[in-house]
Image 1 (tube, helix red, strand yellow):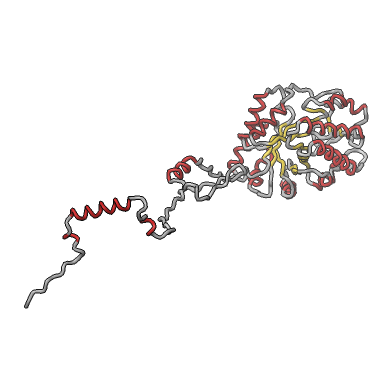
Image 2 (cartoon, helix red, strand yellow; image 1 turned 90 degrees about the vertical axis):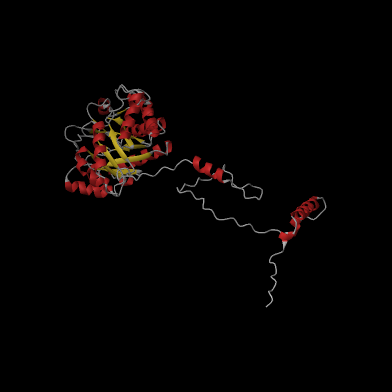
Length: 405
């Protein structure tokens, strides 16, 4: 049997001398490199899609989007723009400031107003600018966001007043305050994110220690009788039915909101009323309502940005025992005064407070603080230091609100 000849596999290129291969390649390169000869790119199909592998470049930390303003140019997507390199992306991520992690608010911090009352002499007397600003920062450190400071009381102002001087012959209450004390207080409070509410203590009532007591008696500005609403001190009520008296209060208030245009609010308390036990049993409700409506209107015309607030008895008690039908006064905010610690009375006041801006208590009600703080229906809490030691009251309040969460 004859052996079959095997056919070589492949193209047989290995049998071509290497010198011939080099010569062919060199000649081909020279030919195609000459001008006018064949452009090999013409032999390839145009507009071939280019597919890039997917790369997830999303950073591990989620960054908040930067809001676009009118000064921020919109990104361009024209074909001439160069794609951002990976190095640029990395640099951008590295220079982006970290976003703060929101701290959950405590029930106390959720209250709209966390206020403390400061009587007329508790900051002002012989206090320089540094002292006033330091005191504001102290109350801020104790969790307070609103200072309610006395600016009027017992028939005189705690600032230099042209109205006082022209009407009564006194420019202010006797006090060693510096003229700009309230400007410093408001300025520092606003820097600290706080508010300042002007507190008109005693409202339309005075006692025998008032600078204007003798004048008021001689001009017959006093309602007959003695107001014995609170034990320990006799008050005399200025009669706002007398035009001269009504104009005094209206002009004082208008002057104040113009002199201190950055004040956040003014607040009157339950001394804005006539006690039902005054002699004569005269119903002065309509007259008091008319006076308040006119005074509020005048204040709003002078400075519409200031809130007119009251801290008073609940609407039933206020109208029944103090001729104060404040639901008709057109006030901005009402805080229910709940200094009486009787269980039945306090629960009643609490129910009213839920329907209004908030509640006012004293240190005597601090044992109820946890209940108030954890009640979301109580929108604001104001504290009146009955003992006359507001810094100690604020410190106790801080401790109690921290432990009540």
